[in-house]
Length: 163
Ligand SMILES: [Fe+2]
Image (cartoon, rainbow, N blue to C red; front, side, top):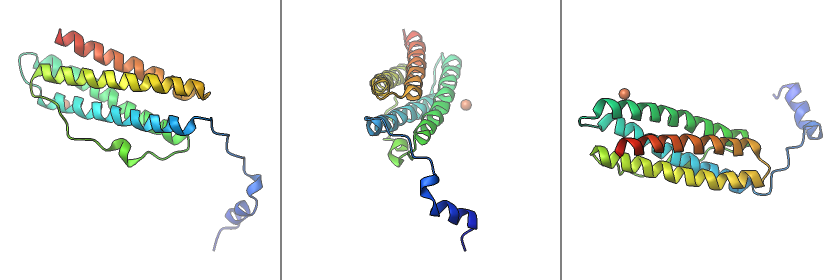
């Protein structure tokens, strides 16, 4: 038997606050966040793999650099997923579904692939920033700004290491 309080809540739906009116491009923004989450998860996975598998004279530096970056990316995965939830949506299975890694075995291959993944993520977040701004969604726009800055920093460090 339903608890009296729960029954009362169901009987008076008009008492519940109406959901906020979604912004015109809300669905597109959510889709964009799911894609950005996927790119972040991909970059996290390949960075952690590089941390495990890197070899060569620069091992100590690269092993530590990759660790610093995969930890930041891991936290970002959670932050992005929680933004999707805060906007009232579930995180899709596809957002965390990854293709096989194409990470190479040499230091240079690793640095190049990871840099390319960061650049792809930056491009995705920049598009999403425009959508969030247009949709009057400052929290998502703020997340976009943070992610662009983080990926730019990671890409800079990888490129400087590779030069
Ligand atoms: Fe480790």
